[in-house]
Length: 58
Image (cartoon, rainbow, N blue to C red):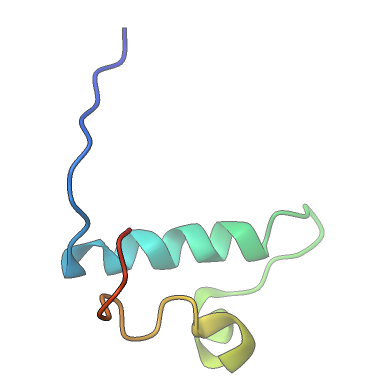
């Protein structure tokens, strides 16, 4: 049995959110964009830039 808990998101969750963005961008096996390239691309990085902004709930 897996145990988990639900908690309020915090600014410390930024690293995890970036990890999830990298996984989402690289969902196709033939795609392997490095983390740095994803974060340098404004069309992708805006999802995690400045986390946790007012109104971000996690």
